[in-house]
Length: 209
Length: 209
DNA sequence: TTTAAAAAGTTGCAAATGCAACAATGACTT
DNA sequence: AAGTCATTGTTGCATTTGCAACTTTTTAAA
Figure 1: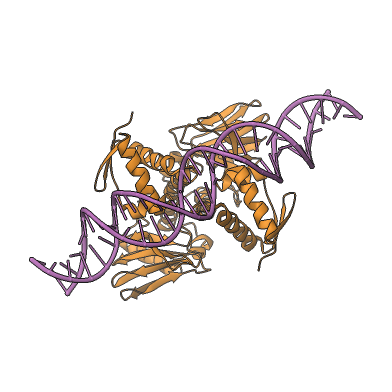
Figure 2 (figure 1 turned 135 degrees about the vertical axis):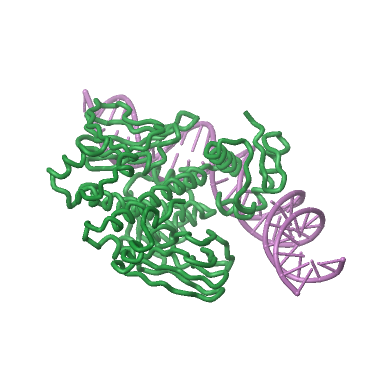
């Protein structure tokens, strides 16, 4: 992921943060940083570790995203508007919060670093769109098998490989493709039986084609 | 949708387009403008009318998006990278194509209108992310009923109303929520029977709570 | 090393859905 | 007004999937 402050010096960064509506906040472990804000904000993890989680009406909590140092999150980026989502610290965490409107409404176009910042943000948002498109492509497939194959294809194309190292657990994969975990497990079993894939832990080898 | 050239004068716009790698192209009716480009480009319809379509392996073509004057499309925005997609003119159409990398790599930060352009583009991309998030929210629901209800809720919240005027056909809605059209039709029937909604053509009234 | 807690695999079964085929309605054209 | 084409509604049936409940395996913690 591109960085919000790339090509901006530490001094310029400090100036920039003074121009915008920002807050540097520290949170203890297991605290909610953000939940369903109407305000559009962008947050950056300065130190520590947090997670975006979702709690559905059954009370099941799933982890949507891991946030480590330099990770970016926010209402502009994720769908934090729904009250099912929250950003929660997993350890003592320092966060920089920037009001999105103060970014957009700031009008002095002479500040080089401000313009660079906007451009960095643009690059990040286009990357995010690409990720979302990939996921939508998967989610619109009608069977679990097709969802899995689409996931495998996208992964392999991107990494130029036939061996997949899942970046998360199978439980998370089931969430990602919006399928029941046990049903997905069953489907993976079929794919193995039919000789399309081979797995060892979170390593999946693609054998077809 | 925000406009790519808002707050940029006609003269500035012309200067800008000379700075960037752009092409103004005219296409006759029923011609393919773009299909699965490796290049990242942004296109703007200057005159005419086109459609983003998708043709699946069965040969079924669906319309993904209507493009009218000032509409923006492109590999950065839609998932045009898959060869299932293409942008096709429905009448004689004039298009402005801008190379995405020439936008990002241009480094002279003194041009006010260039910076404004980047900012406009940023606003557009964040809007797009929001749209994609909404769709993902729908697509991750496990039943057609839940998908429909999520669609209704999002629509109503956004428009502040209990009456929905579908912006497209039921056939398209089925595509949007990734469900079989007849199965969706059946589910809408149940929702009517149970008194949750009432429909008249493409107007849907929400009766529950 | 033991213990606890996640994660992953398995399976029967009921429910939801896709598919196919066709009827009905509505919109548009000549 | 007739005819064509797209959209919408309907229904039987086979398939897929979610769900629940339980086992096995893996990982992390004490």
